Length: 366
Ligand SMILES: *Cc1c(COP(=O)(O)O)cnc(C)c1O
Image (cartoon, rainbow, N blue to C red; front, side, top):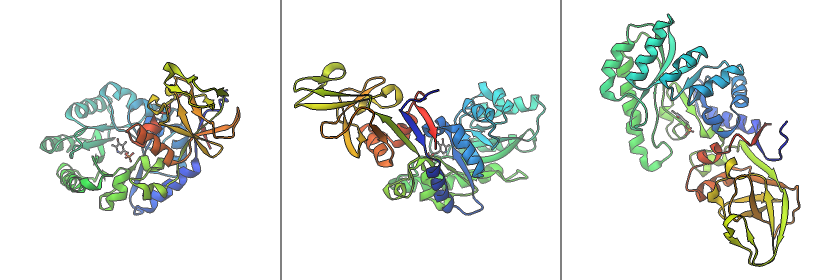
């Protein structure tokens, strides 16, 4: 059994808090989908999915079939959308009762033929519309043809027709986002006008939920907010951090002036120093870009900056001014601000920091 002191603690209380916060922003009739792709944003997809089942969310979504299969094998029976389904995995997807996102004629027809050949009826699928993200989805000129295909057939049931916002977090892109929402409404109507039922209508991710309440429609797709990050400081402050990365000091090095730390000797000790060794590295998701003072951890309530280069399995921090010893607890992050600081140093977004914590790190669901 893995008893490693390095652990990513996933805080179920924080999850419940965040869920409650977002629910309070929705009308009671609005359905809630929670995105648990990429190991539930680096946390623990199975534990999170179980909690979401007991919290009675309406839908889950993952990025690929494999992620959905893992959930099904552990008994998760909520409806699950595979956001970026691939035709090669359609058989597997159907075997596990997952719901594909169909985003072009190739994927649509390939899935349609499979369901027909299996003699299945009303298999739930989701249609993605491209309203300006230019990633996946049907464009306006394709809708007439698509409408003809989806009407008067009963192999597939269009459970939802949805789109994705490209810049919902950015107030400077408000005009563009409103255009996207407007285009989406028109495209939805055009595609569904001859159906005898109403597919679910959804376009909002976390920032969409917060910034565009008029675009909640039938369902919202909550991602990063669930894990504790809003679209700005004020919103983030109302959320709780879900994933806490904790370790402990393996060894302390007492160094004299002129000695160096780590590979390539990029850090030269200027005065008598103390360096603490921490048992995780870039293979665990602590980017090498945090080397030499870019990143920090918290030891006994004080900031200890990374010294020298981050190694594959180990990094060192300067603890010259911190009273600490071997075995003391190291908080790599347990608050959104630390994750945001890492992201800033690495010129990226918190999404990348949390999803980068590798599977080698033990997960502990609290
Ligand atoms: C990942 C994803 C989301 C979640 O976005 P957040 O910004 O994390 O809320 C929503 N919709 C789609 C299609 C996605 O791929």
